[in-house]
Image 1 (cartoon, rainbow, N blue to C red):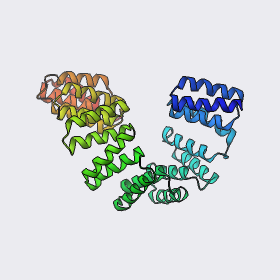
Image 2 (image 1 turned 135 degrees about the vertical axis):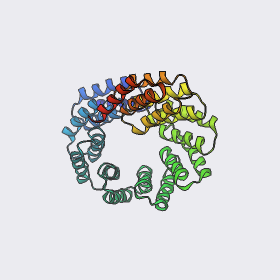
Image 3 (image 1 turned 180 degrees about the vertical axis):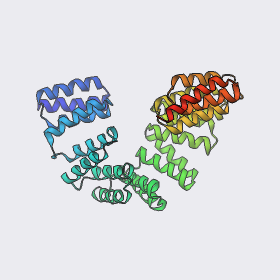
Image 4 (image 1 turned 45 degrees about the vertical axis):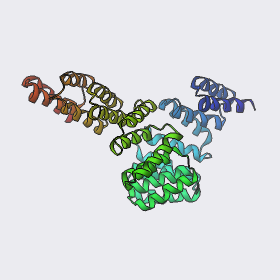
Length: 352
C-alpha cells in the first residue's frame, strides 16, 4: 500500500495544492518504490504535460508508461496520441496510427473517439469520418458534457449546421449546467452566429462566474466592447483575460486594439501589441493588427518612430513589420536609403 499512498499524494499535491515541486519529489519516490507501477507512470506523464508543461519530460514519461502498459490502457494510448498530435504536428501518419491503436484497444472509449475525431477534422480535414467518430463517442458516453460540447462546436464551425449545433450545445449544458467551456462556446455561438446578444450576455456571465478561462474572458471582453459599448466592463475582462494567460497572443492584441482605438492610449497599446507578437511570432493576424496600428498612428503620434524602431529591433525576422517600417521611412520620414535597406531585408526573409 505504500507506493499507492505516495503516488496518490503526489497527485493531490499536483492538482489540489498546485505544489509541483513536492509532487515531482513524490512521483520520483513512488517510482523508486515500484518502477513498473502503471498508475504511477501514467499519472507522472500527465503531470509532466499538464502541470510542468515540459514536453520533453512528458514524452519520456509517456514512453516509460507505454513500455509497461502496452495496449492494456487505451486511455493512455489516447492521451499519448493527443500529446503527439500537439508536439509532433508534422508526423500526422504516425499520430493517426496511434489514435487508431487506441481505438483498436477499446472501440467504445468515448474520450478517445472524440479526440480522434478532432484530429481527423482539424489536422487531416476528414470531416465525414470525424462526424461518424463524434457520433460514436456520444453513443458511448451520452451524458459526457465535454464530448457533446466538442461535437456542438464541430457541427457549428466545420459543418455549419447551426440548428443541429444549438441542439447539442443545449444538450451539453443539460448534462453539466456549470461547464465553463461549454457555456463560453454557446455564448460565442449565440453572439456570433445567432445574433442573440441578450442570451449571449447571460451565458457569458454564467461562464465567467464558473471559471477563469482566457478564451472566454477575451471573447466576453470583445463582446462587451463591440456589441454593448461598455468600455469599462470590457477593460475589466480584458485585464482578467491577460492575467488568466499572459501569453495568449490574440487576447493581448485584442486588448491592445481596445487601448488604441477606444482609449487613445497608444503607449499602452504598443506595449501589449509587442507582447502579443512576442508570444507567437507565427500568428499572422496578430502581426497584421500590430502593423495596422503602427500605420494608423504614423501621422498623428510623435512616438511612432520609436515604436517602429523598437518593433523591428525586437522582431528582426518579422517581414511584415520590416516591410511596414520601410514604407514608413520612405513615405513619411523620407529616408529613401534606410527605407530601401529595410524593404530589402523584408523581401529576403519572405523568399527564404
